[in-house]
Length: 412
Ligand code: ADP
Ligand code: ASP
Ligand code: MG
Image 1 (tube, rainbow, N blue to C red):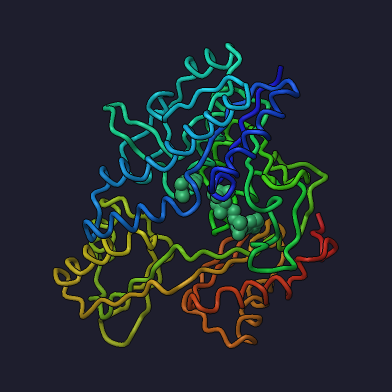
Image 2 (tube, helix red, strand yellow; image 1 turned 45 degrees about the vertical axis):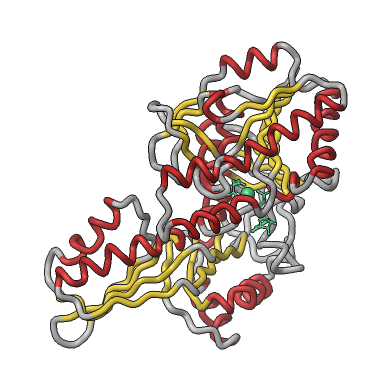
C-alpha cells in the first residue's frame, strides 16, 4: 500500500462546499488503495484577516501571541474536513502541530522544523484513518506554539512526507502546476511538466509562491517527489524531482516577482571601516533577513547605503535603523514599501552573456526605472516601483519567448 501526503491550500478549502469536495477527492485516493495524510491551510483570506486584527492591537504585534492567533486558522479547516470525511462514512482524525509533535525552533512567525514524531501518525494510519494535519504550525521543545512563515503549509506537507517516507507529496492549489511565470499575471505563461529541485528552489526564492521555498529544500534533501497540481481539475501537474536528461534546458526558465520586500536607504553614512557592521549587526540580531545591499560612493567622506528587508519586518527594521543612524552620525533614513523585485531565472544563463543587458533593455523600453540590481550565475533581479510589476513580468516573458518550448537551448 502506498502512502501519499496531499496538501490543499487556502483557496481549495475556502468554504464548506469546497471542503466537502476536497474530502471526496481524498476519499477517492483512499479507495484507490493509498494511505493518505492530508495537510490543510486556513480558509483563504483568514491568515490575512488575523494579521490585520493583530495590527489593530499592537503596531508591532508580539510574535508569540501572533503565533497563537495565526495557528488558529488551520485548526478550523482540519476539524471541518475530518467531519466531512466522517459524514461520508470514512474514518478520520484531525491533529494539530503540537499533537503530532512537529518540533520547531523558537523563531516565532518564521520557525524552522527540527523534527517530526511519526508514531502517532503511523498508529492512526495503521488503523485505517485518513489523518488530517494542520499546516503551517509546530511547537517548540518548551511547548510554545509556532508558525512557519507565510505559505508554510507546503513545508509541513513535504516535511511530513519526508518523515513518513511517503511515496510522494501532492500539492493541490488553484493553478495547474508550476508555470514559466505567474499564470494569473501573464496569460501566456506555460506549464512546466518536470522541473529540478534546484531550479524550483531558485524560482521559489525569487517569489514564485506556488511552492514555499523551505518545502523545496526538504524535498531536495530527502528526495521527496512533489507533484504540484490543481484541486479543481484532473490534469497532470508539474513534477518537482531530481534533475534528469529529459528536462527542458532553457536559457531562461522563468520570470518571478516578489512584492514581499521593502527598501531602506540611509543617506550620508560616514565612509569609515566598521560602519556596515554597526548598521547590519543589530538588524541580523533581530532575526531580520536582508536581501540586496547597495553602497554608493559619493564625493567627500560620505556614502549612501540602500538595502531591502522583508516587508513584514519593515517597521521593526526601520526602528532599529533610526537608532543606529543617530549613533553613527548618518544624516537621514528613508524607505519605501512600494517596491517589487522582478527576476529572470535559468541555469542556462550560466554560459551566456548578454541576458542581463536584454533584461535592462526590455525594462527601459517600457519606461520602467530600475532602482536596484543584483545578479548571480543563474538569475538577474531588478527592484522597480511596485506599480510596474505586472507590466515588467509580461514584457520579460514575451521578450525571452517563454511561451515557446523551443527557445534557444544550451549548448553543452
Ligand atoms: P495555496 O493557497 O494553494 O498555497 P498560493 O496562492 O500560495 O496557493 O500559490 C498559488 C499561486 O501562486 C497561484 O495562484 C499563482 O498566482 C501563484 N504563482 C506565482 N508564480 C507562479 C508560477 N511560476 N507558477 C504557478 N503559480 C504561480
Ligand atoms: N495559512 C498560512 C498562510 O496563509 C499558511 C499557508 O497557507 O500555507 O500563509
Ligand atoms: Mg501557498
